[in-house]
Each structure stands twice: as structure tokens, then as C-alpha cells.
Image 1 (cartoon, helix red, strand yellow):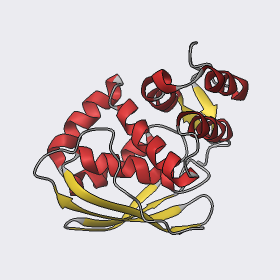
Image 2: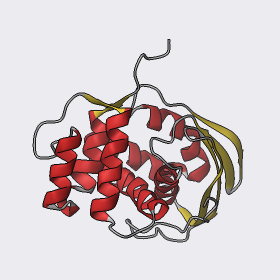
Image 3: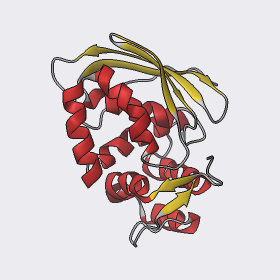
Length: 202
């Protein structure tokens, strides 16, 4: 049964806007988020509409990464999302498992992990081989495909991947297909750094 409205669950909002971005939001940014429907200082709702989530992302991109191109800001927001998720009770357990699975097994779990944050999304791993994969996301949760690039790259990094290339190879405004390649890391890259993504659009 297809849900009547696309909803983002509170745990996703908490991960990005409260835990990851909370200390970095300006006073003006917090006020603009509140005007868009998110009070980061108060109790969260059980869920938010996808339209609200996209508005929250736009506010955060301009507030936390002023002057940066949209794709760079959204790439970093995607990485911060996963970093915030790791600070939640659900995220800690999930990411502890990821560190032992390796990149290939971790990508097989991405469809389940991403769907846990909303009531509508779908992910398919369309091709998976050693150090490479093609992955389709039904809804990239943003106005461009780079937010998903950010959390996919950070997920791979957490699983032990080294040098990364995560790039959208198709995007229709809602769904996107990504090509991911990586090397096996000898040691983990410090959290908070994001591998460069090749510019494909614009």
C-alpha cells in the first residue's frame, strides 16, 4: 500500500538538525527553521512532511555553509546526517554493525536503513562487485542528488572504505542512480571529511 503522504520520521530530523547541526546553526538559522516548522529547541513532532524536510535542508545549507555551491553544501549535509545518526541510540547500534560488515555487505543493508527514516523511500542495489556498485534511490530527499551522495559516502567510509568516488549518473528530479567506487582503507578517515564528488550538472 502506497502511503498517502510522504513523511520523514523524527529520528531523521533529530539526527541532522538537532545532533549534527544544532551547535552550528546561527540564531537567524534557528528562527528560519522555526518559521518553516521546526523548533530545534523544543520537542520534535513524530514526523514531518517531505516538503518541510526539503525546506529545512535549504535553510541549513544557507545558514551553516554560506556562500558554498548548493551541491557542496548538500554533500556535506548528507555526511552530517549520518554523523548525527551515529549519535542516536538506534544509530549507534546500526553503525557498530557497519564497521564489521565491510562496504559490500553494508550497501546491501542501505535499503533497510534508509527506509527506517521515512515511510516511502526505496533503494535498490542494482549491481554490486568488489569495490564498486550501482545504486538506485527512489527519492533523494532533496532538491539535488548530492545530499544522498554525502550520506552514501559517509556510510561507505564508516564500513572501512578508503578512497571514494560517489557520483550521480542519472537524476530525474526525484529519483537518482549512483555509481560508487572505493578502495579498501588501511585506516579509517577521520569523521567529518567528505570525499569529492565529480560535478555532472550545470
